[in-house]
Amino acid sequence: MDVAFRIAIPSDGPLHEPALAFLSSCGLGVTRTSSRRYMASMNGLPGATVLLQRAADIPAGLDSGLADAGIVGLDRFRESGRDADGSRLVFSDLGFGHCALVLGVPESWIDVASIADLAEVSIELRESVGDLRVGTKYPRLVSGYLLENGINHFELVQPSGALEVMPGAGSADIVADITETGTTLRENRLKTIRGGEIVASHACLVVNVNSVRADAQKMERASTMVELIEGRLNSDGFYSVTANLRGASAEEAANRVLRHSDTSGIGGPTIAKVYSAGDEQLFAVTLVVRKDRLTPAIKLIREAGGAGITVIQPDYVFHAESEAQSVLNGKPGPMVQSSSPAGASGA
Image (tube, rainbow, N blue to C red):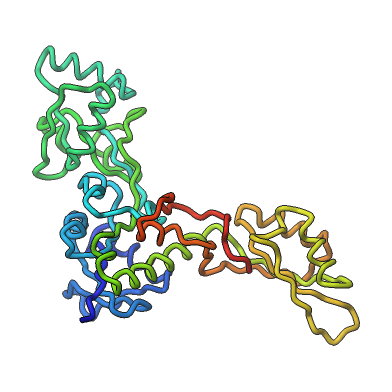
């Protein structure tokens, strides 16, 4: 029986639209027949079902097997503590949803500018009125962070409404909350402190490796999905450059661009003869260069006699081996996070 591969994405909130746009850019666009339906299909991956869930429910859904893969904020995944239960981070940063879980203390605490200052205040509070009260929705991450930074006496307070109003309302002394710009904290007369970032967060892809390894069809679909995502993420760091060079032979044209690392490309340039109406010998040289080295590469190509230079953004860049598939297969290797030129295919 054909068992569907299920991927969960947030049904609303700050990750919903970016997740849809990102998947579409990977050739994995989501088709939803109605905004009221919480199941959809995934273009480019037949047999896959998309589940739209509350972001807070996705880690538990992955652990239970309701979903085989999911896009979720790294903060929620770390808070769930489910990375030891079969759910593995395959892509730790998908390139969107960047924010941070930070401590927010009252602006009136003018002597508190660092986590060390806060540790001292926690001791003073305990001696006078009681433990430091911290309002947060992230008890696991916050308690571990406070203990690691010498704050041993505190009380975690679950909010009944907005976190930022808790110090002003007297229900907490400080808060630990997710922020992108810090604007909401400042509007509520709270400030961040040095060393007060608990975790930097962003959208990540988590896969229940137990469920996909147990079913060959799920493994095939998971492998296809992570290959496309990995190739898309890798492509963000590179341009494909093509230029026409005069020369007596393809070898001569290749040697002229291989003199410099900026024009050597990834694994070397591709050289092809240009069949033109004129008598001169022309060769098309195509190479892949890092985005941050594009301008030096163009300059060197010109110096080598290059003309008609065109630059395009590749949709995908694949390495000789897929790190993401290594994670699925349980092989040792680094978790996929960003692009790397090593082993990538040439133009």
